[in-house]
Length: 345
Ligand code: TYM
Image 1 (cartoon, rainbow, N blue to C red):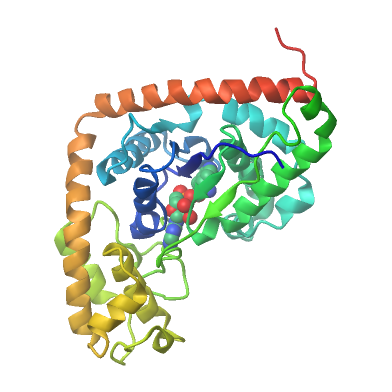
Image 2: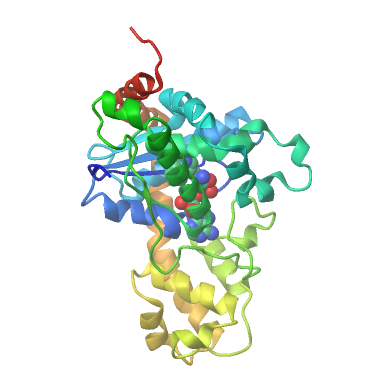
């Protein structure tokens, strides 16, 4: 296998409220990676329209996710920050990958089954081929690493399968075009830290999600201090105090979730948290959790508000990022056209 220069890509959908799961599982980790790697962070607006969106609200949310990227400390000069629809090569490569991926592979995608629900015949075709667009997002930059939460693992496996099949199907042409043994890297997911799957505050067996009907199930990045305090105080727990060791969290999903959230917020481990808070009642632990959450999230919400007051600045960031992303994507797409056998002038 050829070696590829390391490059990070990740995306966030501009649908519904960004929440603590998006932050701890993904966006917070984007910031840490920028110190060591070239990073491309994308607001995936084309993914958003796989389910119906209000155009006005979509526009606002594209800017809000961008504001969140900037507010957490992603540097849009050192990295590329942009929205997907401004780089048409995502859609173009997705078409080629639609012709590489197999229907059987897409039929196994659990997220499609969850999102389409019972009325599958009525789901959009876009929702069905969503994983191929996601593969195109990553592969159009030939990204080697993708930081995501646990829920995206299956999509990343599909991305690798699609890349591998493209490399195999076109092996001869890839070599003839001067790309050696493989054109696409087999991208590695980066799923790490204590909060790869933040759960609902109302039900420890359900993922914290933008689409949950109850706002009490999640902490939104734009929640103020009082709302954060109220939501954590109302969070479901069990009657036992916190254990002193991680093994004691087994079978206690709500306790496990709150401890993992605390650990991720302070950049610590579950063991650290239990060393400090083992034996505490939930009333006391929730108080400590509210304090760290407010001290970490408060400044982010404030900065997001400040940025959202100047949409012109956000749009300029996206325009600049899109220009730089396009340059890379265009080069990849030209190579793909040559490999596949399209004539181009
Ligand atoms: P999205 O927009 O649903 O979520 C954005 C990121 O947040 C993570 N995440 C969570 N992490 C921990 N706990 C949770 N409860 C939680 N909920 C969400 C997600 O894993 C994700 O990392 N398909 C993607 C967007 C996408 C993408 C890509 C990602 C499109 N193209 C290419 C990476 C690379 C999605 O719907 O994420």
